[in-house]
Amino acid sequence: MANTDRTAISHVFRGTFIHATQKTAVQILEDALVGVDTEGKVAFIGKGDKLDTLSRTFGFSPREVTQLTQHEFFMPGMIDSHIHASQYSYAGTALDLPLLQWLSTYTFPVESRFKDLEFAKKVYTQVVKRTLRNGTTTACYFATIHTDASLLLGQIANEFGQRALVGKVCMDRNNSVKHYRETTQESQEETCRFIVELLNKKYPLVKPVVTPRFAPSCTGALLGQLGSIAKNNHLHIQSHVSENIEEVNLVKELFPESESYTDVYHKYNLLTDKTVLAHGCHLTDKELDLLRETGASLSHCPSSNFSLCSGVLNVRNVLNRKVKLGLGTDVAGGYSASMLDAVRRTLDASKVLTIQDPDHDTLTFEEVFRLATLGGSQALSLDDQTGNFVVGKDFDALRVNVAAPGAPIDLIQSEEPKILLEKFLNLGDDRNIVEVFVAGRRVVPFAEPVE
Ligand SMILES: [Zn+2]
Image (cartoon, rainbow, N blue to C red; front, top):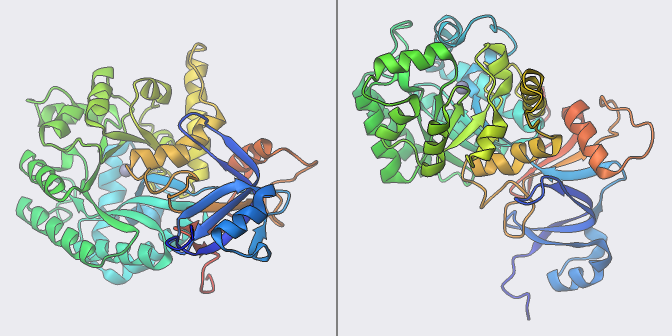
C-alpha cells in the first residue's frame, strides 16, 4: 500500500558512499545501500544489513543490487562553478601574460572564431566530454557573444547528459579587439533571444545564465539591462570580480561613481542569490559583506590565479564571512579542465598563505572536498538538486575505483575509506572515475566510442 505512488527504483548500489554535509566536511557511509528511482533521484539511503526490509519497502530484488568492490566508493559529482568552454581549444598554453593583456592577445581573437558553428561544435563537444569524464557533473559555462554557438553548447551538454548553466557572453565595450564586441542593443536583444530559445528547448538539466563578461567590457547601460532581464526571468547571473589589481584600477576609472568593483554590480541589480562571481582575489571585507547580504557567491579559481599571477584568494576569510564559495577551473586561464586540479590548487593556495603567515588557518582536504561538491552546488543555488547524497536530490555521482588498473595510484595495503578519498583527490585522475551519473543516468563511459 505504502508503495503505490512511489516512483519505481531503477538502480540500487551497495558499498561505501562519501559526501559532505553542512555539518561534516567528509561523511563516510560504509556498507550503505542507496536506491535511485526512475526519475534519477535518490529514493533511499540505508544500511547494507537492512537489504531485505528495503527491498520489500521499495519493491526491488536483492539480486539487482550493484555491489562496489573494496577499493571503490561513490562520491557526489564535482561542480565546476566557472569555466570558459570557448577557451578550451588553447587550454595548456598562453599563460605568460597578466589578465588584461592575456584577454586581448589570446582570448578575444579565439572567442571571435565561434561565429563559425563547425568550429564551435568541435570545441564544445570536446570540452563537455573532457569535463564529464573528469567527474564534472555540473558546469557553469561561459560561451562567447555568439547566440547560435551558445545554444549549440547547451544542446551538446544536454546530449551528453551534463547539468549545465550556459551563458552567452555580453560585452559592448572592447577597444583592444574591435571586431569582438556587440552594440548595447545587440547584446540586450541577443541575450533575450538566447534565453527564450534555450528555455524553449526544455532541456531538463541545462539552463541559461545571464553573463556580463565583467564590468570593464560592459557599459553601465548594458549592465542595467542585464540586471532587469535576470530579475524578470528569475535567472542565474555570472561574471568576474576583482581578479587582478590592474583590472580593479580600471574599474575605478570606468565607474568613478561606484564605491567598489562589487558595488558596480550591486548598482545594476546584478547581485542576487543566484549570482556567481569568479575570483574575488582582491575584495575588501566590506565587499565580501555585500556579497553575503545579497546572497551572491564566489567561484575560487586558483589554477588561473597562479597562472596569470592574478592574486591569492583567502578562502578562509571568505568562509569566515559566510560568503558562499565553490571551485572553478576557469579554463583556459586555468590550464586544466579537471576539478581534481582545482582541488589541489585550492590546497596549494591556502598553503601559500600559511607560508606567508604561519597563523593562517590552512584549509583541510576535507573542507576542499566539500567546496568541490556541496559548496559548488550552494554557490550556484542548485543545492536543492545536487551536491550530496540526500533523499529527493538528483543522483549526481562518481564511482571511483582507487585501484583501477592502469590508473596512477599504487595501493600498498588496504586503506580505510577516508585515506582512499585523500589519495584519489591528490593522486587520481579520470582513469579512477569508472562511472559518472547525472540525475541517475550513466553518462560515462560514453554511449558511443570515444575518439
Ligand atoms: Zn573566467
